[in-house]
Image (cartoon, rainbow, N blue to C red; front, side, top):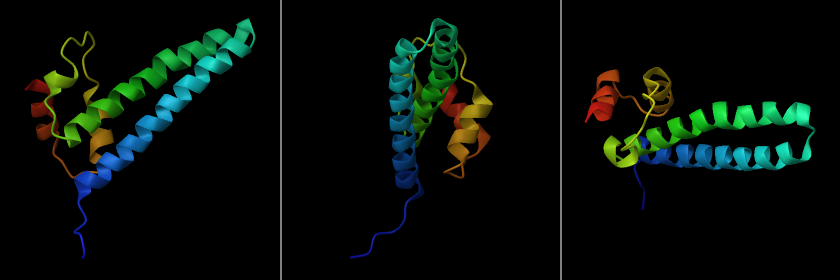
Length: 108
């Protein structure tokens, strides 16, 4: 029995792996920042709550888009706007979608 290759299924698997590795990195960062000296703690914490948190949000949004979940179901009370270009880049790496489709998903 042969199954046809589906881009969406592949994208879901890749994004789930990406999400898991980011969660692991964030947890590891927290543990290491407790062990390191005070002069490094601020940098470690800044990386975790800055770059890692932003990337986790983008990955979660990309996964919701690929799974065809409504944007408002994923982020109902977001205080910061979605970094559209970064989100579109993450989604378009795996799927051939238009900018309009992603923009429409965010606005719906």
